[in-house]
Image (cartoon, rainbow, N blue to C red; front, side, top):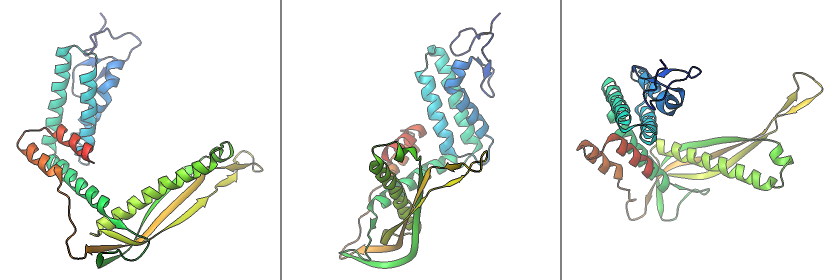
Length: 270
């Protein structure tokens, strides 16, 4: 007698692989297992991993939960799968007592950093009108690089557009790293900002024929340089943003919202 898949209740065919969730007696067909099984198995393994992180665990949890809720399962089967998933989450957080605090505190710190980065002033000059520099924290930099296939240049009518788009992308990332470096030093501004660019055209002899030259993709790199400083607005204090995640933390502590809702709100705000 053919074995049935616990989720879809269909017979597991002769050529189909029998799959199971770690720690579960339920057998699944390949189709149902692929929807949520791999993530659940990763979560099971993370329960005993000392270096496992709660945010990674919750990312797998949310995707697996959505897959089960949106899957074409019978209501009672869906409820059983969701119940097992919830028990797995409780087991993981019990095994890692510091996870809850790490998730919440990490989300609040991320939100505060994003607010600070959005308010951070940068200039290629060495002062800001209406502000006084109260502290110099030294030289900082941010870097990024990108590879561009050569056919994007030789087989395209938009060489200039492709090149400009590449420079814009890596320059923005380099500036982001520059501001993060200033933030990590406790600063709120960067002065003397400039950029250094490097374009590499890698090429080498073919391993099969030394007389043939192999041309690799172009490599374009940029470094954003500057000096991290603390500035104060003349005549008044610099305003700071209220962190809305602190309000959601209070709701989480009171049991008004769940941890998944808190994480979802974090992703929405950031």
